[in-house]
Amino acid sequence: AAGSHRTRRGDRADRVLGSEKRFGKNNVILSDIRKPADNVFYSGPFIFADILDYKNLREIVVNNRITWLFHYSALLSAVGEANVPLARAVNITGMLHNVLDIAAEHNLRLFVPSTIGAFGPTSPRDPTPDLCIQRPRTIYGVSKVHAELMGEYYHYRYGLDFRCLRYPGIISADSQPGGGTTDYAVQIFHDAIKTGKFKCYLRPDTRLPMMYIDDCLKATLEIMEAPAEALTMRTYNISAMSFTPEELAQEVQKYVPELEMSYNVDQVRQAIADSWPMNFDDSNARRDWGWKHDYDLAELVTTMFSYLGSDSRIAQAN
Ligand code: VAH
Image (cartoon, rainbow, N blue to C red; front, top):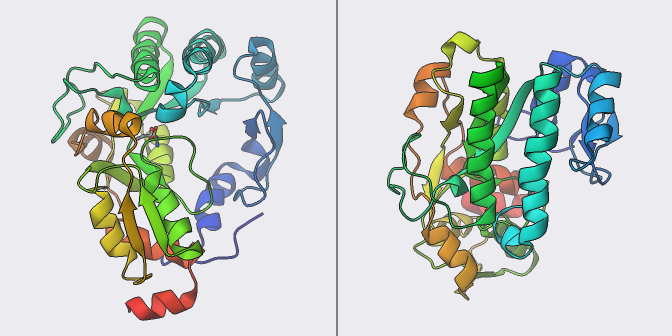
């Protein structure tokens, strides 16, 4: 169901569904192992698909004459550390023995998201370039480096049209936090509105690259539509902003002045965050296929409250 809210850049549903308008409503198929949440901005076909079921995936690709595949199945950083066997099965076996093989077999254009989590404590952190040492300390990060390397191997060995973006922490108003380390930056909005109080599991000075969902969707469609000859790489960093919980809280308090921030550091997620980039160097993406972000921290917070918050808070801020 298309959203009923409007943001400064027009209705998100138009932009997200724009891909359906661009490619044809029945040519964009959403698939998952569970039905989409009611507020997902999508009204096209939906198919059950299990990343661990090779036969199921291959049938979907053949029966629907799929040409592009966007592969988003994965356990994120913190939830992956709590269930390493499942993270290994979904993020590695599912990706390699199913998605990559099917994409190569059926000549699909394949998009796989990687992440700031594909770097580790021995990577340069400020900024982190596209090409540098990658020794992540989470199963999530290891699985994403595996996806990057295997996708590029299939590209150079078999000609697979593999394309990959390393996402920062992605923030949106219409999805709940998904077990990541950056999810505090989503939860703060919901708690600020509901209770006026937010307890943050990271230290106030923890700087991480972040991005609003519309920029993420824009970058994903742009790299998938970029002419192959423009791509000097197959895996790119993309960036929009980097902020700390303290900086985010100050921006949120322009809309919810009564917000009370407290800090109860979760050592597991703090250790993950401390091993990740603080700032991303995305100059290759900006050079090769014209990447540029639209949303900075102020725009992000305004837009989130335009979806979530009461107008009265917006009035207070302006
Ligand atoms: C996580 N939000 O925190 C995800 C993301 C950039 C991090 O991959 O695990």
